[in-house]
Amino acid sequence: PRTDGAWDVSGALAPNGSFSFKGPEGQTQSSEWSIADGAFVGVFDPAIAYFSSAKGSSGAIAFASTEGATQIKTTVGSGSSDFVGKAGANGGVDIQHSQTMSDFVETITTPAGEGLPDMTITLRAPKVDLYASGAGFRASQMMQILAFVVENADEAKLKAAQPQYKQLLLAALPFWENVSGKYTFTDFSAETP
Image (cartoon, rainbow, N blue to C red; front, top):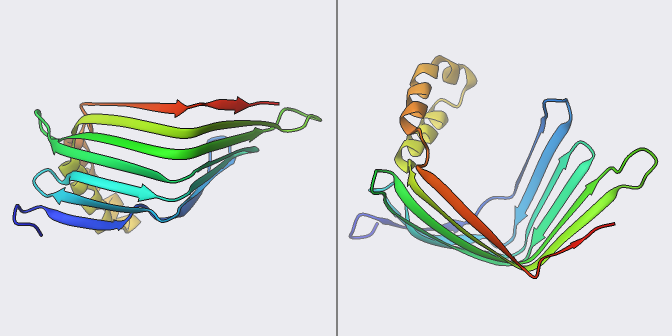
């Protein structure tokens, strides 16, 4: 803890992971991702239930997704990010986020039709920048929802507590007053068949 009541926090940026489920038409949809050397440091401010500042960095990031016969594979090289959060004028937290990534490559492979070879499109950019901002994020209410779900992780317990869960969700709405973002791809190129 710091003398101002905030907390210095550091850790891994995000875990590697995967998930899979059946879509509405019965097709399996799956995704998996990995983040090399992901790390962050920041200052968590309990007064806003969010980070007043944070920085992150990572090595290579890989993401793969399959929906039916369509496959998407995305990789980026190293990256860095900065977050700033402050109390919003109308409650919640106002957030600014910037991120830079190198060596973006995305390959999309999809069936072209019966008897035809698969169609592959490859998108590339040596640098990608992201800027995003949001006003009035209900961080405190979202933390309450997360704590409730963890406390009631058992499916039967969660079903029995539906009225309380609904109250927590309604109290958090809208999750944001507004959100905006912009990606910039430097020297973007697309390779098509």
